[in-house]
Every structure is written in C-alpha cells, then in structure tokens.
Image: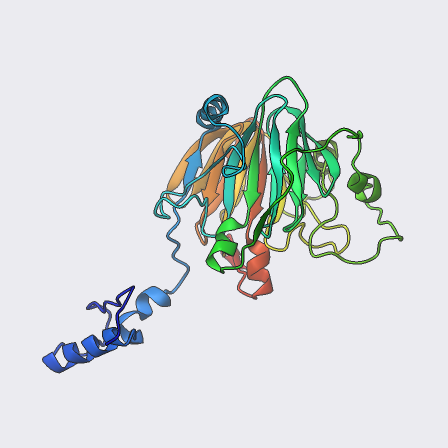
Length: 371
C-alpha cells in the first residue's frame, strides 16, 4: 500500500463545464488521489489564468523603520559561522512568511559594526550591494578589495569568494540583493565557507577590477573573453550621477527625450557583452526631475525599487505610497506601476527580467501598447 507524504486532495470547482458530481466520479477522484494524480479540469483556472496572478503583494518598507532595527541588531547579534551575515531580509506579506521580497528576488539590509568582519564564503546565488548611507566598508571578492560608498552599485556573480570588512570607526548599512528565491525554487544552490578573516591590508583606492574595466566606454583588448556576469566589481556613483544629469540637461537644451519627459534612466551593464550585469538580475537607476509623472506600466516579472534621494509617490496596483530616502517597494508581476514627484526623486531598481527574456516570456504594457 502506498503511503503519501504529501496527500493530493481534489476539490470541487465552480469552473464552467465541470462534470456532474456522482458517486462514481467521487470514487474516481479518490483513485486519482491515491496515485498522486490531479485532473486538469479541476485546476486549469489556477494553473492557466488569463494573465499573471502573483501571490506576492505590493509592499513598502520604510528606511526610517529599518535602519534603527538594524542598528539594534548590531548591538545584540554577533557575526560568526552559522549566521554569517547580519542581514535582515524583506518578507513579502503575500509569500507566507518566507524571507523573499518577491517570488524570485531577495532584498535585505546588512549592518556591519566598526572594525568588524563578515567572514568569507561563496554561493551560487548572484548578488549585489547598493549603498544608500555612508562609507568605510570594503568588500573583498576573490582577494580584490573594493571600497563601498554612498551611491555605489557593487555586483558580485555567483560562486566567487567574498567577505566584508569595516575599516572605519563607525557602523555602516547597505542593501543586499540576490536571486535566492529563484535558485531555492529550482533546487540549484551550493554554498561553501571560506576564511574567517577578510584581508584588506593592501586595499588600494581602486580595485584591480576597476583598473581594468572601470573606464566608461572603453574595453581592454587584453581580456576579450565574454563572461556571463560583469567582471567590474564597482559602478561608482559619480558616473551614474553624471550620466543621469546629462540626460536631463540635454532635454532642457531641446534635445528630445526618447522615453518620457523629465525621466532619465540608465542600466548597469556587463562590459564584456553589453548585457545585464548578472544572469538573473537586471539593475537600473532612475531620476525624475521635479514635477514629473511617469506613464503606467505593467511587466511580466517582479522588481524592487529603493529611493536613493528625494521624495515622491509610487503607485502599485491599487496602493499608493508617499516615499522618501531609503524606502523599498516590492512590485509583483503584472501589477500596474507609476512614479510621480513634485521635488525630484532618484531611485535604484532591480528586477528578474533577464530570466523571462531568456525564456521568451517577457512582456511589457505601457499606456496600452504591448512591447
């Protein structure tokens, strides 16, 4: 006799054209359940809805609430093997308490005390750090020390050794983004411990990765092999800021905007391919000039926004929030989303779009036009 560890239960449905409930049909359903079978006619409405219907919910986490709790954790929670990182993950209210911001994306605030190490490890999950506040921490990737400062975006592909060290006399917090939920769901994760201490003794002003790849528009001819993730370990704020400022300046000078007036945007890219910095994560930065309203957009796949500076409004589905510096917002798949500001607003965005593009499942609707 078969013992079921996860019993299948076939329930009645109000979908059209269902068979008449008879004792014979009930007996057939019991046989299906015993053999771990499910008839499609009872499930098709859930499995094949007319449009994406995510369990994730639109949600906002306020930086002014997150940062004090991270500071308290800094006093109460040590870093060591087992915990590995003092990271506090965002848990979407629609995902049953899992520490996932969306079904595919992880976001967390990480906090490091003065002179403290987050020990070295590696994992198959693709990751990045984005700095909203402060400086003083170095992330060391495969022995290459990289300084972290406000506005810097620091990607780090899976299965690379990395640790963090705070060389300053003050604490520092930043946002971690990873594809943990996606890799967890696909049963593809690996993890390995490295040394307990992070070596920053010879930390230069510019990492080896920046010296080789950190020259905008220039690609070294001595390293031509394309890599699936970017070899550049730091995208510095001064470059991002200048690119956004110049976009808006050209618009003010009469050069027509190719997207929306008052909305400048850039995408972080892999200099070896021109594609996304990470195989499973797309990262962008958006700047809205004062008195700007964006069009409403729906997109297959989910995203997380963080307000870097300024203030404004974000509308996701039927929910509208007033947001300010540091706030994080989860946008589930196919939820209508728009941005607005009276005073100006900068936002960092990351999404799972590369996954859907590779599967040819990507779809965007903007003001009624499908692209």
